[in-house]
Figure 1 (tube, helix red, strand yellow):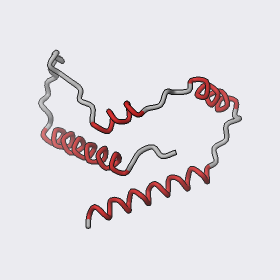
Figure 2 (cartoon, helix red, strand yellow):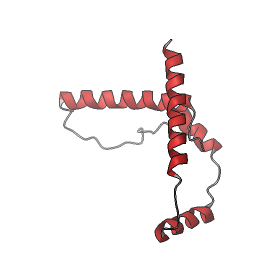
Figure 3 (spheres, rainbow, N blue to C red):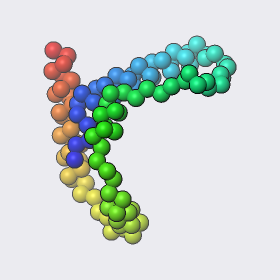
Figure 4 (cartoon, rainbow, N blue to C red):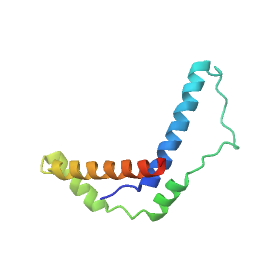
Length: 104
């Protein structure tokens, strides 16, 4: 099961870097030292990636989720660690290949 496309990962990574650099700059400057009350003008904006994930999301199979939870509690759920590792390595290699192509 693939969780995201490399473009999604890159957009999220770029947003995270920007957020981290802003937070680091605020920490270095000591911050403003005040907390303002939220107003009606405050808003949350979802990225295109989050909107796409929400729109494309399949409904959650609650029965399957409960079945897995029960199996985990009872120690009957076993993870194929080799399959998980292979998929992680494959996705990392794909991401690195995509990033190296973009840098050229």
